[in-house]
Length: 327
Ligand SMILES: *Cc1c(COP(=O)(O)O)cnc(C)c1O
Image (cartoon, rainbow, N blue to C red; front, side, top):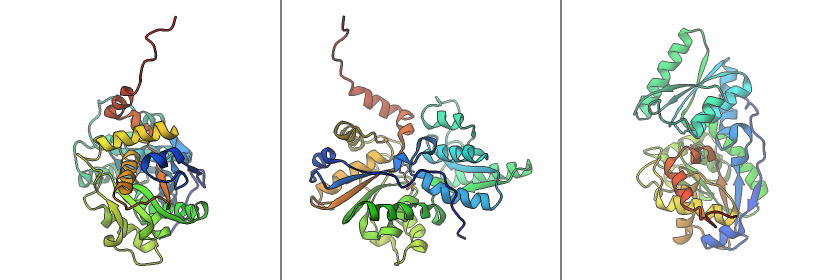
């Protein structure tokens, strides 16, 4: 079941050196490179674009006219599904956890701008979201529409193909690459990288979106990888989850500030700041060493920073007054 991808993003994305961040982490200045997958183009950018090229490609092949997907209220994937729909002249319905009424900041503001319709599923788990999405699809069909359901986070074997391509780009861009560090949410991003680069080269930092993230990565990677992939051989850190997916942790706050102040690089509070905190922990415990080439994949998520009240408050704490008033 391999359809052609539909072009949505701008590729290859650049790889940039991050010498000041490298030193701050305890690495050599030339050890650390940032893969700018926050710069994928469409809809504010981010990693979901690569996966959507494949999942939306399959939806178009089925004749869909409406994209339906699920996520947290501040889902980057839902926002980019809405952008892809707008780009392709399709409708989008986003089935989101929670209830309407909260301020429509961050990703929600963009969902509205892209013209997506929202369906609020209440305080449910993923199974509850999937049920709500099935109900939305049934109603759309009854109204004569042709909905296609894009899986949670765009992750599956199809979506992971987009990250096989990212792995191939990295192979060409960074000779002697030892470790690629990436946030691990729904699993498709790490899965594609593992399929392209091998289990030993990819370090996933779990953000707490799934009960068993390694199993998901292995399931999505295995059909795409030349070698066998088992969950047990994956490099996954689970020490950055803290009190859960949407809760800003101390190490992630420090990582946000560190990337911003050493490189002018803005991370997001849920995924990439956790991933950088995971890299910092990996250097501290010797899993990632100075003298080796390390790539940090910036997977995007900037709108999520503005949609996260704790992260905005944390960022504001850094604003020092130079003077109350000049003249
Ligand atoms: C979704 C997301 C991830 C995680 O990717 P998965 O393929 O879901 O594991 C990482 N970073 C950002 C900014 C994301 O939106």
